[in-house]
Amino acid sequence: MSSLKEILTRRPVAATIRLTVPAGAARPAPPVGPALGQYRLNLMAFCKDFNARTQKYKPDTPMAVTITAFKDNTFEFTVKSPSVTWYLKKAAGIELGSGRPGHVVASTLTLKHIYEIAKVKQSDPYCQYMSLESICKSIIGTSNTMGIKVQKDLD
Image 1 (cartoon, helix red, strand yellow):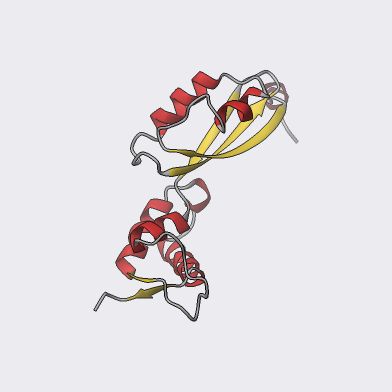
Image 2: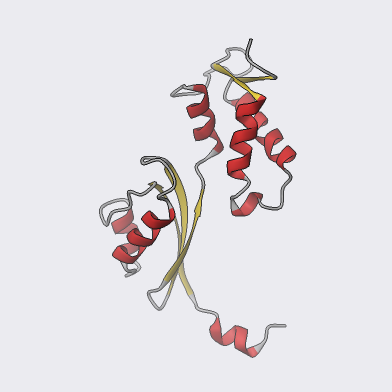
């Protein structure tokens, strides 16, 4: 049972918006402008806040952002680190994964690469309660589906 204070402070949600925006490059232009504009949210406030939160990442790093728009024209947002596939492609130095994973190897990475990616992903809200080992196993599974071979160390 919710308390009365909780019920009174709960704001009605107008929408949940999911976007992928380059780090430090949020502008009122598309895709950000139209997505937030239709809910009458303050574009400049979002852009300034997003760019401040993502300044530690290299420019053009794709950041997944989930914006919760409330009916009183306010918003909250969470920023996730780039996808595992993006990190794997960067580490392997490839544009695309293998067209035939399991048959054709697109590239090779070491367990050290996997560990480094897992350490970055550990800060994500949905990974914070997972062990580093299980995050690594998940990343290895993703690399296998992309045709990226994981070795103990490079020969």
